[in-house]
Amino acid sequence: MANGTYKSKGNFSYKSLEALQEDIDKLDLGLKLSSNFDVFKNKITIGEHTIPNALATHPMEGGDSDSIGSPTDLTTRKYENMAKGGSGLIWIEAVSISEEGRSNDKQLWLKEDNWQEFKKLNDLIKASAKEAFGDDFEPITIIQLNHSGRYCKVNGKPNPIIATHKKPLDDRLGITEDYETVTDEYLDELIEKFIVAARLSKKAGFDGVDVKACHGYLLGELLSAYNREGKYGGSFENRTKIIKDIVQRIKEDQDCQGLLIAARLNVYDALPYPHGFGVSKDGSLDVDLEEPKKLIQMLSEEGVKLISLTMGNPYFIPHINKPYDMGKYTPEEEVIFSCNRLIEKVGTLQKAFPDVHLVGVGYSWFRQLAPYVAAGSLENNMCRIVGFGRESISYPDFAKDILDKGEMVSNKVCISCSKCSEMKAKIGTCGCVIRDADVYMPIYKAMNQ
Ligand SMILES: Cc1cc2nc3c(=O)[nH]c(=O)nc-3n(C[C@H](O)[C@H](O)[C@H](O)COP(=O)(O)O)c2cc1C
Ligand code: SF4
Image (cartoon, rainbow, N blue to C red):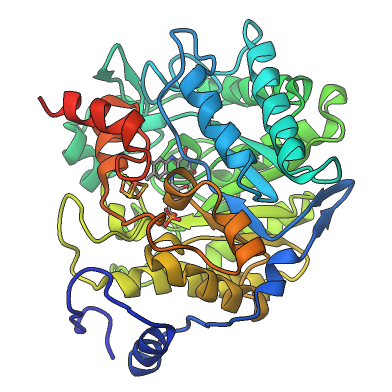
């Protein structure tokens, strides 16, 4: 059935696996279901690092740093909960590599002055996991390095730093045609800032760094800078040059030796050409994986063997990025199609790149049925690791429940209500308002007063 023509009963309403399978068949979706939860016990070895199981927490920006960008009690509490939750891969949220590149004044920011605070955070994650699961259990930690680009804010006010104009996004932000794009010199210097942050990440003890290029942030925006002039725009090689240069420099850097280099990449922006990456050039919004494949190939050749894939722009079209039941608008397409796009396309790419370990996304909406969808993906080689985003803040011990009890329980799951996203957009600080209500409901209520 064509995407968008199917109308479900509304919010997530699957009472059983059979009902979900019925819709998968009826709608001819690529989702696979399996009850073989042994696949979550798969260990993944990349170089000298071993991820002890096939479950990951996706990065979730909490906007809860102190004034100089260091983790606070709220930050450490979140990661302690995740560490005790049993995921083999803990992908730390977006951390800014520069002051002007922050998404808000409470975004984590790693620098020479505070790397010890990040070391404490990493030590806490490792120690908490060991305390919960024994000395042999050590989750792999990846820190996501980012520049927020057009979504930078200073003193609570937008301060867009753009690589190229994109009319649909510019209009939303009030960016006029004469607004200046960053210079090539700025981008040259940015490479150095990523390297400094990677060195500090290594000193702080993280196992790896994520050179983030997704969700409309600066490096993600450059992927579709078709109309930008100079060495960072135009051709595929130019648009991906900054990522390649950063990866090569980290690889060569003496102070970064042993760091696992990872990336979180958008493989579909859902914006029409020339504004979006991974989109057909015929003006439609059809997915076109030709360039994402070239990008993964290039990164793989550079030694990047752990890649988390994602889609969309959370500020513009959030349903593509995090399929929801309740949100700012009602999408044209049913939620299950949005999940299917994320899961199936990652599957296509995993099959095309057997030597790269892809982290899949799009599972939180399936609530207590998510482990079956996730097991189906792993069993069918549609990703090597399954990542959970919202679930990791609503239900941080989802991995433990899946591995020990063989289930995710319905009264702990994320209900995809978008309240955490609403908080992130309005005040920066966010968490799960529903399942972590003691802490976040008061903040949510105060925000809406
Ligand atoms: C409040 C919030 C914060 C997020 N922060 C980040 C982030 O820091 N970095 C990132 O790559 N993705 C971020 N995401 C996206 C998630 O990592 C994930 O891709 C998305 O929620 C879809 O996965 P899910 O369906 O399991 O939630 C965020 C999502 C939400 C809702
Ligand atoms: S507030 Fe909690 S339940 Fe609602 S979408 Fe966010 S994580 Fe899920």
